Image (cartoon, rainbow, N blue to C red; front, side, top):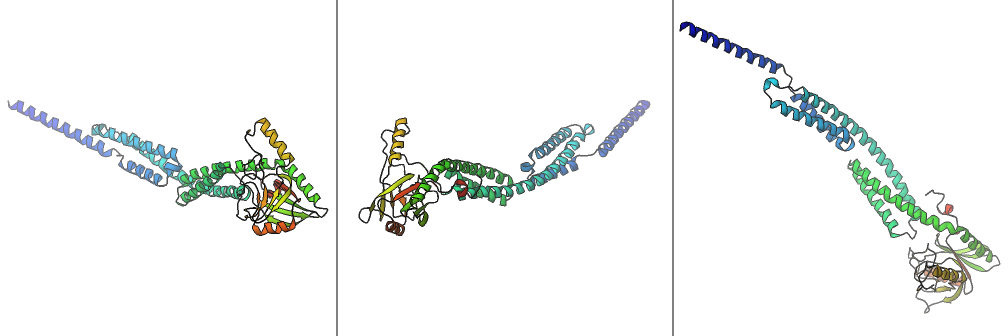
Length: 375
């Protein structure tokens, strides 16, 4: 029995020694293993700094890669922590964390570079867009444009203003998006208005001939009225020279060719003063009634009715006058030519019934009207 007890005691000592050695080995293994906590912290800080630099906006792809790698590191860390301590391996966790940190630093650097470039690009774009809006204001603002063109111009100005505010606040991506909207609208407005103006000047050769004939008719000393619709000026010519000029206003649809009653377009062609209306005979202070429609107007009216471009119920219209009550600063008449009261007084002292009146779109070519500006 004594020998058996000694053997048991010896066996226990051996087992305890083995356990002690095993624990010691585990402690040594664990103590020598590199933990991922520092790498995870550095990766987390790098991702946070990248986001502060708005890398999620300006370097989206690289930033998202850094986030994905950090998430992978966290998943692997959780997986390893669930294993028995001796078998834990943090190498993949550390690898993902280091790659996440590197990508985050790249994203931050790229974001700073892109945002700086974007800021400069947007600032340059503001200058370009302002020129387009200035072009509209110089060439097209006073034309009788369709509402869609007018609205497009206003939307462009609104988006440009909002874009500048976003830019000042450092919201460069938002500023870029707003700018692009503004650019789309002003391009539409300028393109539509430009086409309308170019199409209108297709008749310039005809206008030039009418104007030259009118001026020639004044060379014998007779006074002739020549109306330039684009310039909004009524001239009085005598002996081949303009002796007076007055600011004029027309119908809101003055760029259209007058076709029928009620279209609020001011006609073009050669007419004569049929009669003079003074106080009591007109609501417009004074008026010179023209002999519209002339033979050409009637011919075109009949042709358009025949080909169906005008309805059968349409009337050709009449009562086109040069009259007072003008000076409103916009085109407001039913198709007549409006002057200020003092100007119609002066005009009536210069001319009377029988005076030739020639109305043209413009006496100057489009290149002069636009001052050579390309559009």
